[in-house]
Length: 170
Image (cartoon, rainbow, N blue to C red; front, top):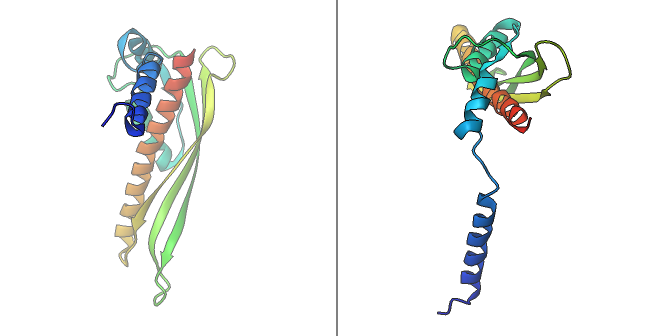
């Protein structure tokens, strides 16, 4: 076996490309830049979001953006508009009842400076969570509510990551 065989050449190419690119990347939440980004995220005030799913999302965003609970004066405010719908994915052919459902939530978000000015970042985040349905009404209600909570956690994570990327670029 020679070092000039094609598989060793490919491995060498991958290793050298990795070493070249590794100098270009920096961690988003680490080092001095990470501390500045964390303080910028903590300075985001979340505007009230109506409905139950909005309440769950606002709580998750408060925790995701400022999990320390430090009292930081707001530099930005985050506006979120939710659209929620339930889709039935499976129907029992004998009884005609839905056997599962999906809670789908779309979130239009906009990050604005507190004193006014142009939008820092905006976008659309969406997610869905499925749940099983049964003949018990309250079990279905609880399962749908748990799906809303899972959606809120996923949306908060998406929105926080997108905002962090936008703030890190500035």
